[in-house]
Length: 190
Image (cartoon, rainbow, N blue to C red; front, side, top):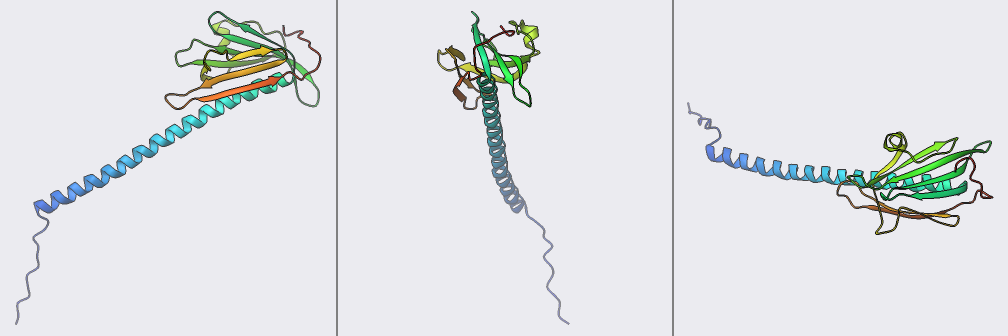
């Protein structure tokens, strides 16, 4: 009878354990770095898309209101704030007239903001508590160079601003809308 060779039950040595542990740490570090990079890129893309969406919402709201307006005016305040008021037609099966206003607040910590209000009666300059009830269209808004956000020349309203969220690249809007609502009539809005 022949004796069979003894099975090697030695197990894993200390050196092998250290090598396997080091390889595991390297692989987990690479995977963790890739995951962190992916999450950072995703956050930047989402912030950029959100910023662009808000900037386009502001521009579209102003353009549609001005395009259907019969009168428009701008008030410039010493603080750098601006308020645009318009008498505009609301589209639908019948034409109804509304007063619209957009308010740019210049002195905010992270850039200014633009708010919007629609009313059936005249819209007066709001105080800060009244302004908080207006619809917030966008934050992080600032004028481009030294030009005001809103400027009026005859029947055209220019809108020029940059919007930035956190440290992501700014989105710049430069748009001009023309009043096409017919004869100039501001009652009852202003």
